[in-house]
Amino acid sequence: MSAIRLLVLGAVRMHGRAHGYQVRNDLEFWGAHEWSNAKPGSIYHALKQMAKQGLLLAHETAPSTAGGPPRTEYEVTDEGLAEYRTLLRDALRTYDQSMDVLSAAVGFIVDLPREEAVALLKERVEAMKGWRDSVTEYYTPAEGPESLGHIGEIMNLWVHSADAGAEWTRGLIERIEGGAYTFAGEGDPFVGVLADDQENPYATGVRDPGDDD
Image (cartoon, rainbow, N blue to C red; front, top):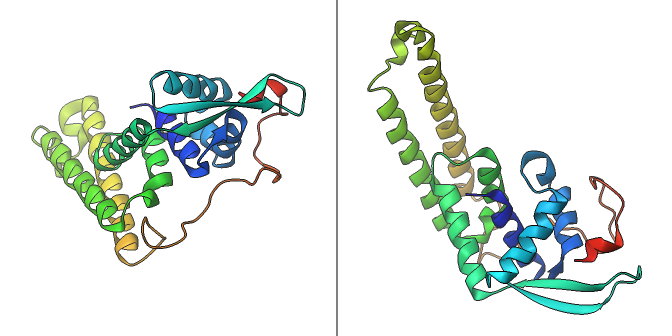
């Protein structure tokens, strides 16, 4: 799974309608350009591709104030919303997601009902346990990696990664079950987007008129 689809769909959904520069600005504000492939070119490409695929609806508006071409604003379609929710759920329940995909999913986790978020995370813990058990069929952590030569360090890494991932996930579950954060249907959620006139302290460069796409 690519993090860029989840990030772009989620960012557009938060605005209702958003143009390319707004999406880019939000993702940079979240630091996604540091921990994912959400670079400017990838963002604009994803917007246009998902519009072609029917996941986003493109609205052409008035030309930009900078004198560039007409700005295109995007809106998530019903198909796009279904895709977004599928990507989000799969990213939370699957044990072997890459860090950028999991990070994107955690950023949007409050779009789900609290009980569903917990259930998906519990699936993740069980999947990690199953994966760990499959590794320890061949490797016994108590004997140490040396028992298998230096190749044992690979399995040792996998076991430690599974243990750390499960510990983090259980901690998140505990915080959510304890009432942390505002989830879907519970009230006004945390808004992690910038206002149009709010300066982005993490922007990677000067705004270009061509960014209005």
